[in-house]
Image (cartoon, rainbow, N blue to C red; front, top):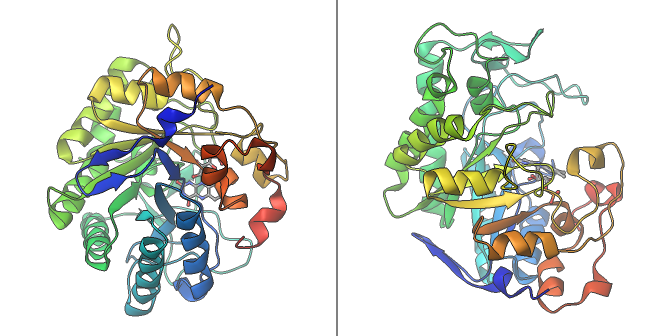
Length: 366
Ligand SMILES: Cc1cc2nc3c(=O)[nH]c(=O)nc-3n(C[C@H](O)[C@H](O)[C@H](O)COP(=O)(O)O)c2cc1C
């Protein structure tokens, strides 16, 4: 099948992307003390040189004392870390690419296996990481206000350093998603509530603050997932109507692009249609969307953490959906983590040179 549609340019506000390939955000834990190193900068630059259209950084945490559970996850605050990020974006631009940081607060976490702990207790909407597992504080109004402000400062810093967009991490069971999910949000104040729309207030306040910080013309992405690592089959929105009630206020608050995280992009979101999450998000909001999940690979990413390898796979089903107009951009994770030249190889039909993914790739910055 022709892969032409993957290599058409895409423009939205501050983004003029040469193709539709987005490097998905992937935590690498190669930033000791939270500071991205020259090796981290070189890793991202190789992806730009390998013709990735838009790079989204690994999750990088905002300025709250317990925003991380891992001492080697990069910060997006403080002089040393921001200097490191400046090297990253300058390298990516020199390599011909574009990039946005994925700004992140992990919320309530399991303690990291390394034994590293943040200086204060983890914080979240109700102290819960998942139903029945409490590992931290319930955030006060002051904590919430400061966290919203910290997201805004990170977004302003992204723009000031020269990044091309910013992505808010609202997926995968971390802080923002802990507010969305009834299983982790038991609040009875205006940040909780019976409906998903009510539990979205925190996300909406974050989006408004980020939008205020970067102005109208800078592209703002939010990453969302229905699933959590502790609940694969979870649906925050059980019907298209609920999805519309969930996403529309976020679009109105300032989101330009919804990054719709699935483990397998071909899985339908709701019965009765083969549209996936990104397909529905675009349909109900009219906004641009990014799909993601096992693009070009045979196995999905959470199994990859348990050591499962994946071989290269056909892009035909992806292209069928893309050509139908389901989504605008395509996130690619492990295939690009394992091979900086994946995009260039796909573009030039060098199928025999595609490598697949095995867990050894996680231990190094290839
Ligand atoms: C090593 C690794 C780290 C990841 N870290 C993040 C992260 O920091 N933020 C995020 O939103 N998703 C993260 N993900 C999920 C990926 O962005 C992507 O959604 C997932 O790997 C599915 O895409 P793939 O099948 O192309 O790999 C991570 C995935 C992997 C493999």
